Image (cartoon, rainbow, N blue to C red; front, side):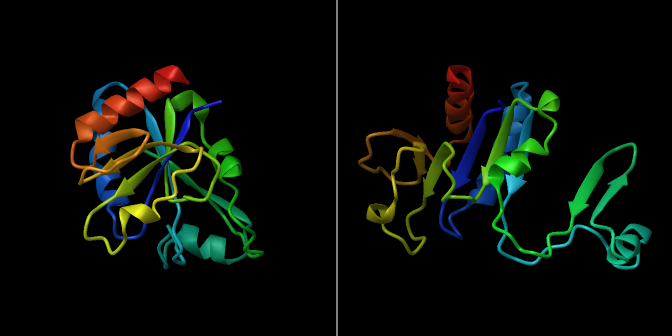
Length: 168
């Protein structure tokens, strides 16, 4: 099974900002990260007016758009069942990945690094440090019984993830 590690935090804490810096750092170390991003917004990866969009809107339950550079699978979910992270991870090509990073899904029972940023409108005491939290990344010192990472030190966070993968 491929290692799955969630980056979890309240909205506005900097999950995407961290991942935009962390992913290239992991890649520079020879790791092949995949990413699953949870969004609460209605989203569409296709463009109105394009053939693929029109064909999908015509009623296809699943549509793959493919080119020599990339391909994307779009699956319609009209029943709006709760997202199943394990199912989504299972759709990824594990032979092409060393790790799946997950943005969001903070209530899933998967290992996670919690982020905390001072001034985000939350207090450190609000952090839920359950058995799935493997580290906390913060921009201030916190009193936690876990690895405490500097939220602004991408190399330190990448070092932690590398050693975490090796222990898996």
